[in-house]
Length: 258
Image: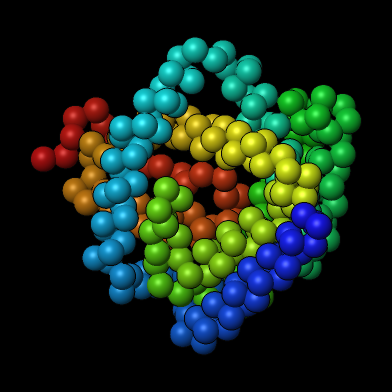
């Protein structure tokens, strides 16, 4: 019964995602020109409000929690947590590579998943990277871009942060299609999903702890800086231009810009 209810919920959510995609696709900017185009931000006023709320949540809760995590948990353990989280996402990487027609990427993602799951103790160790299979995250937002859908207007999502219409739809599809989420809801193990989400937030924040501090201190307009960095990172990821899972932050001097 629970599985049937989940299936109906999945179909309803998928229908909403497809409708949103169809409604916004015609008005969006071509994906191939995103890196050079002016970012469309018609929702700047509400976006800035959500950005400010996200900033408050980060300063008051997420950053302090991450500082404790970094200060208490040894580097090897933090790396193992990161590896484990990424390994759980591997089925999505495989699926998106296939949807993009990147069969070599799908082969690499499959090899990574099997190698790390078996030899890496369930993904705690990234044995595949040492064997020459690098991590290459792929999401459904990138898949939509490969299919030719433009980004659409810039959006700041509550707690999630910078996004756009296309990537928001992509995030929804990836969330719905996440095998662990499907299993968790079907077997009533939702607490594991919440634990993974919390761990993923702290892990991701720990990767850019100093960089975000530098951006806040040196940016004349932190909102505009974050918006620009997001657009650049996404354009690079879509081009498969050796993009990392997080933006490449600029180097700053210790002295803030006057």
